[in-house]
Amino acid sequence: MTVSAELIVQQVISDAGPLPAGASLDRIETPAAVVDLPVMAANLVRTAEYCREHGLGYRPHTKTHKSPLIGAAQLRAGATGLTVATLREAEVMAEVTGDLLLAFPQVGAAKLARLIELAGRVERLAVALDSREALDGLIGAVAGWKGSLGVVVELDAGMGRAGVQTPEQAVELARAVTGAKGLRYDGIMFYPGHIREAAGEQDAALKALQERLARFLGALRAAGLAPGMVSGGSTPSLWRTHEIAGLTEIRPGTTVFNDRTTAAIAACRWEECAYSILATVVSTAVPGQAVIDAGSKALAKEELRGTGDGYGALRDRPEVVVKGLSEEHGLLDLTRTTWRPRVGDRVRVIPNHVCVSVNLQERVWGARDDLLLCQWPVAARGRAPAG
Ligand SMILES: Cc1ncc(COP(=O)(O)O)c(C=O)c1O
Image 1 (spheres, helix red, strand yellow):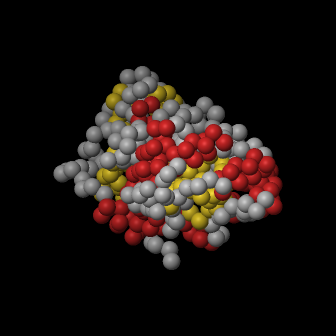
Image 2 (spheres, protein in one colour; image 1 turned 90 degrees about the vertical axis):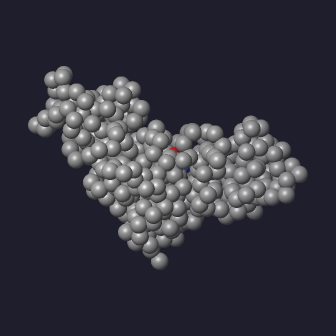
């Protein structure tokens, strides 16, 4: 049964920390990260319903929000487990789920020791890898250990970032995992990060991906190594993931909040962007522009798909873009608007790439429209062991 978006909002508010006395959107210090809770909850419910409709497991990537509070909301919406990219994210998300996929190879003694410590207290932890070296590290780390650690073989689906290149390599690694004591062969994963065009223009890329995945699945099945988990998915390809045969689950991250890039490729509507940076106009001295107190240390200096069209745009005036960024200064381009802000005015900026903006924040404020409701820490940022 689908949990209602309103119930998710209410639970986030009750899990989150109380507001400082007198806090309101007009008064809190800026820059401040603000999430519109009903918009976020609707994003979660929409994604969970899509997964249910297509028989796909929903394992959202928590690198976008880095908060166990939002992880818990995703689980309430129907997520079967959570994805993480760092050990700190894994340790923090273990507070809310016993089913974690660490979608990043763990290499080096320090990380491996931390991984095994975590695996000992999590019901089901799996880690991705694409090399014999990473596997040998894991085998060494679990030697003499009583538990069982899942391994997922990553394949390169076309992005050219990580992942084994051929079905033969996948078979070889999967076979080596099945033969290793203390390790469990959970399946395969890939990240289609190369698919960044609008949903209607993804036909060729999806077809190539589908064919490539079929070759890997065919080889693994023929070798008696049929994967239990076939994990894929991304936000740009989200609404067409069901067209890729053989997937058992997807790991969208950005879609929880969405951002200007996601809206630019029509993977969400502008109104579905839940996260913005509240900023104050601090200077209008230079003609044709206004300066806000949100620079690259609040918004992150991320290009909009190589277009050069700024680093973010105003939520309520999307024609006004952030044309330049210093560390603490954001420059609003006023040449495409008749709006003339005054020093002291407040604006909300949708960043180009929400995940890196969240990572720059200590806390996030939860709101409904212009009403501030709660706040929570971005608990999984940083690298240090949690707790
Ligand atoms: C391995 C992996 N899985 C899933 C995701 C989620 O992608 P998106 O934010 O496009 O939904 C990412 C994003 O970086 C990723 O690296």
